[in-house]
Structures are given as structure tokens and as C-alpha cells.
Amino acid sequence: MDKIQIKGGNRLNGELKISGAKNAALPLMVASLLSDEPLTLTNVPHLTDISQLTEILCGLGVDLVMNGDGHAEAETGRVITLTARNITSTFAPYDLVRKMRASFLVIGPLLARCHQAQVSLPGGCAIGTRPVDLHLKGLEAMGAEIELIEGYVHAKAPGGLKGAHFHFPFVSVGATENLMMAASLAKGTTVLENAAQEPEITDLGLCLMAMGAKISGLNTRTLTIEGVDRLNGTAYRVMPDRIETGTYLMAVAAAGGEVELIGARSDLIGAVIPLLSNAGVKIGETNRGIKVSRNGAHYEGVEVTTEPYPGFPTDLQAQLMALVCTAKGTSRITETIFENRFMHAPELLRMGADIAIEHQTAVIRGVERLKGAQVMATDLRASVGLVIAGLAAEGETTVNRVYHLDRGFERIEEKLGGLGADIRRIKG
Ligand code: EPZ
Image (cartoon, rainbow, N blue to C red):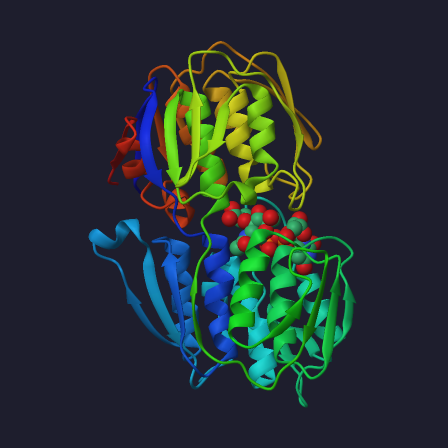
């Protein structure tokens, strides 16, 4: 297994291009199931999660053409054309769904278009149990009959799905996406209350609308979707990755230096900029993206709780924790989205951090300096948190299990190396 080795202490300077958003690209790819015409997506990142999903979609009969894998295109992202002219299977197997939870999103579009689907339950994962009950309750409200048989969801809607009113008891990004796609081809109008309003939901909504869907209420907690008989193909550019953006902001804040993030959008990371600015990190908009800088001065500790958008995202919690390990004073980070998302804390302790976990809250007392160590993490964002810690630490840090990073961070060692970090991949 590959490892990433970092010699800490170098400041980061220069510019880098922010990639297309993984968590926007995945549902957009699934949306191709809703039309028999081609959907062309541009600015798709080169990530293993994307390749995993292509495998599932191909298994359902989607014809896929992928360009942009050459080095020259690395800066502009992949172009993927997905054509679901004939859906030849409505079965998504355990082996594939278990590896990539977002593939559970195929159930809504398959039900809407083919009136049936058999999709494996994804199972738990390193950050929590992550059930899919809201996806299923919403589809049932739209008339689907659902049975669980040997770990598989068997769903059918003999006369097609029907519009419904569905109130989410709490916010779910994936369930909102699933129901939005299903409702686009249902008979009648669907109203989703207390829906997620993450920017990835808006990206999906805009693409569905370009395909002919009738959706109102994007960027709010209530989505109204008037079902149509068919959707057409379109071309759509995936939004820039707000989590990658936030990650590089924190990397520069931790290591020091000045970096321009080309293509980054400040409107997508509303809660992050004031938090870092108050802590003493300089962040400003440029006409190409966002510039971040920190000189030698220490930054202050923070108090933050993860929340659905527009609150502080859980997907940046590990990176923030790594950053505040060396802040002035004490920080408190409360995780409310996932029950088990502090797996990076014991690894940071190995690097000399002072962290105590009290239920959902991590209390981090700033230390003068972290020290390099061998570390490993069990999820994507935790792994990149450890990379940030390694950049700021004294000495050498080796981050094991790099396959997590490859799921969600495009060419991370090249991007950080280009800014002056001493970082390399050791092939395993
Ligand atoms: C999406 O996951 C993201 N994944 C996650 O990013 C992100 O952390 C999460 O949203 C929250 O922002 C993708 O977009 C592919 P949820 P999702 O449904 O949709 C519970 C990353 O690192 N829940 O909003 O699975 C659930 O267990 C990943 O890129 C139910 O109880 O998240 C969690 O506690 C990790 N029943 C909470 O709701 C359900 O039916 C929010 O989950 C659905 C969710």
C-alpha cells in the first residue's frame, strides 16, 4: 500500500488549481440514469471514488466515454459522457455499493425510470453507522413498495412513482439527492421539507433543470419538484470542490506562506472564512479565486460545531483539528453529524498534540509544535488532516493507507509539492 512521507516545516507559496467537487460529481453521474440521452460532465476530478461509481453505472447498462486522463488535461479535469439509452440491469451488488456508499443513490433514479431496483444496503463505515432509512421512507412516501431481503433493498413502484410531501426529520444530503432525482420523473408534485441545501444539492438541481426537470426552492430548505415524463441530455460543468478549498486554506494556515487557490469560490465556504480570519489567517478574494496567507504569527484557538450547510462542514473537521493543535490557547470542536468522526485524534496525539475527547466534543490545548510520526487514518478527511499536521510538524511524518486520500484528493502530493512542501509518495 502506498504511503505519503512529509518533512515538515516548509512554508507553502504559489498557486494551485482547485478540482471539481467529488461530492457533486457523484450524484451528477447518477443523474444520467434519468435520461436516455447523453449527459456530458466536465471538470470531473481524477479520483478512485469516481472510477468506482463508473463501474456500478456500467453494470446497469450506462454507456460511458471518459476523456481527459492525459497529463495536459490534469489541470482541467475529466470529461465524462454517460448515456443510459437502455438500462439493462436494475441490480447494484454488495461488493460495489459497500465500497462506495454514494452508489446507493442509484435506487431513486432506477425506481423512477424502470419502476424497480434491487440495491445492496451499504453497511456501516469508519465514521458511523450511516443508515439509509430516510432514503427509503421518502421513496415509500412516493408509492414505492420496499422489502429488505438478505441485505438487499428490493423496491418496486408498479405504476411509477407519485409525487408526495416528505418532511425530513433531520437534514440528509444523500437522501435529499435521491428523492430529488426520483421526484423529477414521478407523476405529480413532490415537496421536500427540511431538505439539505448543501451547494452540491444546488449543483445537482441546476443540472436536472438543464435536463428539463421542474425544480424550485434551490438554496432553501424546501424543494418543490414537479415531475415530468422524460428528461433530456445536457452538458454540465461540476462545481469547484469546497472541501478541497477549505483543506488547502487550512494547510497554508498550518504551514505558513501565501497561496492563491485558482477557481475556488468563497460563496461555497461561508462558515470557514470568518472562522479562520478571526483566528488570524488572512483570506481574500482575487479575480481568479481565493488568496490565503499567514506570516509567522500564531493563530488563535477556535470554538466550532459541525452543522449542515451553511454551518461548518463535518468534512473539514479533521483538517481544522490538525490546524488548531498548534494554535494559541484552547479550541473546542463539536461533531454533530457523524457519531464516530474523531479517529484522527489518537493519531494527532502520536504527533504530540494535546486533545481530550468529551462525548461529541474534542478539547484541544495548543502546543508549541507537533513532531513527525508514523500515522494512519480510517477515512478520507482524517487522512488529509494528518497530512496538514505533517506539513506543520517538526521532522518526518509518514501517512499510511493513502488509498483513502486517493478517493477524494486529486494529485495531493503534486499539488502540495508544487507549493514547496517536502512531500513524496512511497509506492507500496
Ligand atoms: C454526504 O454523505 C457526503 N458524501 C459526506 O462526505 C458528508 O460528510 C455528508 O454528506 C454530510 O455533509 C457524499 O456527498 C458522497 P447525510 P451522506 O445523509 O449523504 C444520518 C466525504 O468525506 N442519516 O447528510 O451519506 C447519517 O448517518 C463524505 O466526502 C440517517 O440516519 O450524509 C449522518 O449521521 C463523508 N439516515 C447524518 O444523517 C439516512 O437515511 C447526515 O448524513 C441518511 C442519513
